[in-house]
Length: 274
Image 1: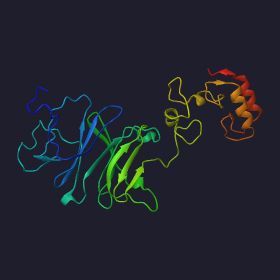
Image 2: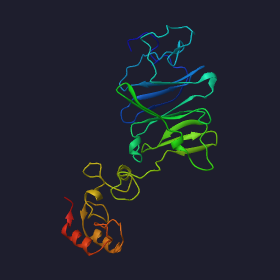
Image 3: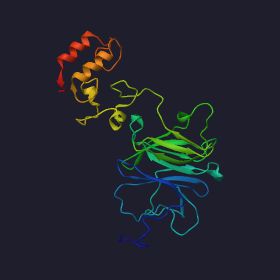
Image 4: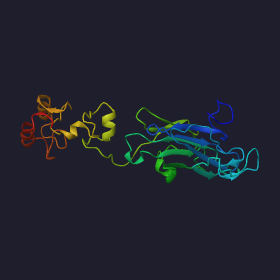
């Protein structure tokens, strides 16, 4: 790499990384590094980094000098973590690295990095962090928002994971449980009122998005209320008959229940959606 040291070593100065993950959209790397005595830290490696950086250990723990030697404290060549938190006498257990949320079910969470301390209860935390242009722009404690309800307790997080759609999960060794992070608020946007976010409809088997505008095709063309094939036709007419009188059904265009007004609108828009 054109730097001193063994070629197989990509970076230096990490003590005990516990869970590293790439942002699946930007390809940036987040590295949670467990501290030695009093500090836990989170490191950030931008996509395209050529390696060879030194993140400070053993002369630095977080942003504090350890006095252990081997390097010069506060050397400007050392890369500082983007976030540290105190862990005096290991009251909290250890930082647990997570993931940048890139799912579809919680739009407000997109782009936030979710991570935790191992011993959430009673000492540690679960955080939501945003890192943009080299600066932490948001840091929130969200452990209270993730309350799993009666009979369950989050207390010893050991790992995070994500599924194919970017939804986040975490494992809790305190109760040998796996939790999924979900939203308890209204699903938005949900143009077809099916209780599933539009982005998840498009990713899953529910809807198509032929024009790629991020809106399910059935919402671009409400008259295609039967099979989502991008046109108003006989299948949609039969679906309308089956929904006749139903309020809020897919073929209820005016919100007053499927009826003659909706039928006339379907006829007026017969054929491919424009």
